[in-house]
Image 1 (cartoon, rainbow, N blue to C red):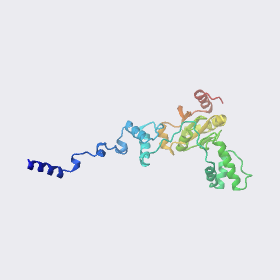
Image 2 (image 1 turned 90 degrees about the vertical axis):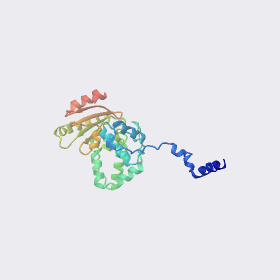
Image 3 (image 1 turned 120 degrees about the vertical axis):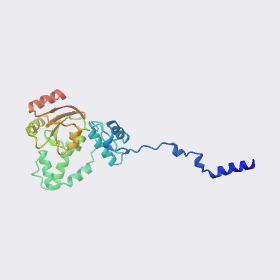
Image 4 (image 1 turned 135 degrees about the vertical axis):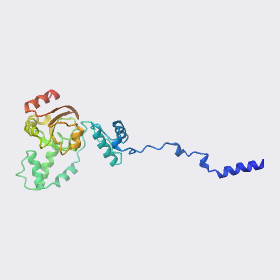
Length: 263
């Protein structure tokens, strides 16, 4: 009996405590790493799931390629890339000091070109600060029409993909986008027609164009298949699109039908 008790005591002392007790930490299954699977091997549903888990907006991604690119960017930024798309018509406060600082960093030539593009005379502005203030006032006024201040009423402005996405955050006025390429003959035919439309629409419509060769990822997001492609947006959402060249009267009639805007 004494021998048996001694054997039990010896066993208890020699076996590690961890053999009898499971650490609470080990009872929780390890969390799956967000980047556990190569992006190219993932299904569309998996891409969307990981983007949601990272709180990354993908509402403007219309195919697998654009979803893959969005997730690639999110992983590069270590996840936590928060949703950047705002509710349409949400205005971002203008940092006037930062805007003024940016304008003051421009050269005299760039300031004059900016004013000329806005059809503002600058010949009587002899000092650089006079040019700075003129551009500053013009941009502040333009931001009531365009969230970036780059789009000008009555004018067709070429935009980058990033600028386009920013403009789509502002619900009004609606946007007419021309997706073109410099080598495209029909695109060159549409250009003056679009300028005439912009001049007639004025502040009722933001008119812009985007080079598909310079912005291939954005063109892919919007599923551009033919050139030129005209797309109408209202409230930050696509209303309709047309592929191929149209003349000014056709474009005006199309806008009136889709948006109910009279010239």
